[in-house]
Length: 485
Image (cartoon, rainbow, N blue to C red; front, side, top):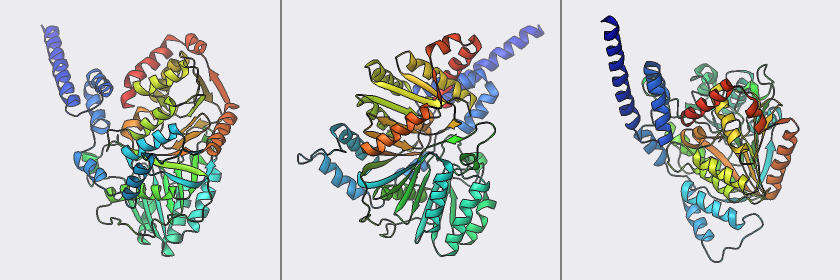
């Protein structure tokens, strides 16, 4: 009788848990793959699953989405209208940079993200943390009017302290300093780190934070962007965060290999606009209005790179950067080179990569050889196997942890930024990428890729055939969770 009672109670709990799980997941609009993934978590792990969902699964509030969408793109809206008219005009002539396929991509970004096309930018590529931060710190020390910084991670370590020290010096000299950081990526509010900077007049805000964090903060939506704008004339965008691990080899990962850009030219104005959108949505009292000093035209820069700064995030269902990746891959005729720490494409992205490989295009994906997130890495290995079966190449980088987010197509177009090739970057994170239409920059990134290959080991189908059943199970199980990783 006692056993029967236990069975009945257990059955009732399972039924109630399943009903509540279905109601919880279907309460908010979400992708079908994410629905099944969350149902799996909530049903298999009844109590723990709901706790995890409360932190990671809830969608962004309508109020915050409105705050993000309602911002005026300072200095940008009029330019967008004029560029749409120009691109759709019969008088438009293709240049060496803006080919027909690039024109289609430019048009898509104008419509989906109001991403203006800027030309004659000068771009410098960094793949080494010491060189990147040395350059950034020099530029910050020479700031004359303002400094705007937005990073996913600003750690309270030697590198983070050096950054803040420079910002304190510039703030003391009368320079307007603004900083946005992500609480999840920076491990909290870091009030101690920024205390003196704030006292000197600097403004520091955690991205879209609320007063009652335990009740309202959704760590699932992270400000993953890495942007710096100095005097409206120099900009940085890419994958490097502010942390010692990007400068000093760690015991676990070794050298942290990433890619970042230093930009001079009107592309900086687009970075500036992106920063102010995030600032005005984050800061409740110190909102920024248009000022010529924030948007100076770069009349003396003799660069050759045409680019668009594209952003995406959970405030829009358009997944702009993902669409850009897919469009670039779909237009490839010779080669597709991808560097990413996390390779977890959704079904649409997976199919376009598989189609390219099956069409005879050289598709090569580079991923890390060591995991920083076990479930994520197992899912990455699963999808690596999927594209290997279609003839693509996959290599694991042995020179440390590969954190770069780079796409190069045909040696003509390229993208560098914060967005990984994973569902999280496509749908959940706030991301920012530079899409560049310049053979010189694309071929430089292609050469960097080829140099990195010297430190890689190719993955083969035989490697997956030889792996244990347990390893295969972990990859398949992680793949089930991929929409929410």
